[in-house]
Each structure stands twice: as structure tokens, then as C-alpha cells.
Image (cartoon, one colour):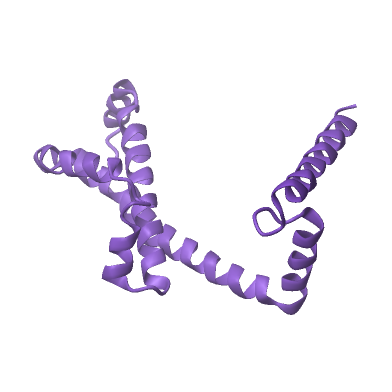
Length: 156
């Protein structure tokens, strides 16, 4: 039953899309058939794969550059309370800064190529991973840490 309901919703959405294209004109809203033809054309001629791999490489590089320090820094700051107190306002301000609004600065600093896109992704990923990792470290039960110390773990 759900499958048919989903199909009905899909048909209604495509019909609304086609209707909006007819009402507003193709220069404002391209119809679904024209969109499907253009998608097929870029799929067949290889443009989709070329541009998709460029976007994927920017995403993966940005994730690695932002994610690794974002995951490691909370472990360092957990042991260095004074450094955490000094850096905390800057980290919170960096997290709160609208990254899309900083895009023109990234383009000025890194150029219009891949580097600016990687820097934007890295800045978003760093703060998300940093604060999620910090929250995870803060939520560890202190009784479990005390129990682990009883067994004298080593810092390997």
C-alpha cells in the first residue's frame, strides 16, 4: 500500500512541476522532461562523471583535512585545561560563523579552484567533528574511567 502511495505522491509532484513550468515558463522553471533529457545527455557524454569526481575529491580532501584535526584536538584539550580555556571562545566563535558567508574570503585567499572548496568543506567538517568528539568525551562516565585506572592501563 505504501508503495502505491509513494508513487501517487511522485506523480503529483511531477505534475505540479510540469504545471509550474507551464505557468511560469521554461526560462524560470524547466519542465521535468527537459530536465530528464539534459540529465541523460550529461550522463552519456561523461560530463556528470567528470564534475562528480571533482566534487567528490573536494569533499573527501576537505573531510580528511578538517576531520582528522577535529577528531584529535579534543583529546589534546581534554588533558590541557588551560589551553582549552584559552581556545574555547575562538572555537565557539568559529563554529558560529556562517561558513557560506565566508565563501568569498575563501575564494580570495585560496583562489577559485579546488583549494577554496576544500578549505570550505574542511572548515565546516572541523567544527562539527570537534564539537561532537568533545561532547562524546565529556559524556564518558567517570566511574568507568576510575574502573579502568584500577586495572592500570598504559598509554600506548
